[in-house]
Length: 258
Image 1: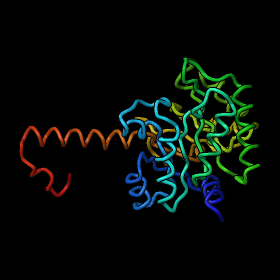
Image 2: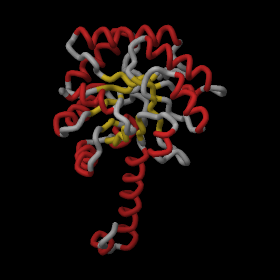
Image 3: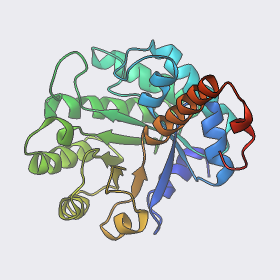
Image 4: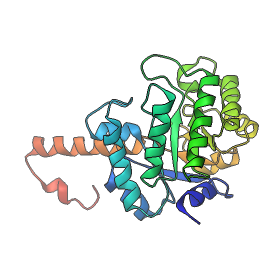
């Protein structure tokens, strides 16, 4: 079984896939060391670590270099968050997906948000893009490569529920392996969406939406925490650095439980 098949299988097991989100090689190695079965990169965390805001502000090849370093140095499957594909046209996005597959990842997240304006890609246009991505992957030997189609309906629409189901169904029919709905939080909506689509549902950790076992009971197959861990680590670093400067004493670095 290759790494792509292994990652695909993790979405069909009885247990929920609890994905660890990494932003650099050290965080990825740490997540692997403690026992996470797969890693997803966080574009927000990667951008933040390089001094940028999220939103495709980094050069794609620079972003891909970090993804490559992770994929080459861990033994567990890696899924790459490539935002909306880092391109203004379909051919560029498809080429970027193939570049990402070439560095050894087992899947991608790709979203339907527009980057240079508010709103989402129209459904038919995004479906065409997903179909092109799937065809290109199959033609280049990446059968079963995991396309996690993220829809940002809950971030951008006032009444997102029905549109989320419609988009999810269309995306799966166009080649998506799974559906990612960040911002989805209500139990009854999670359960209804999970049962309405013929693909694994991925939700994002939020305050009040944190328990794998509860989400598994609602039909969720994949759970990730995005930039929450990287934000917490950066906040801890900033707090400790400020304490060092304020106290002018390094004793806090040797406390048993930092």
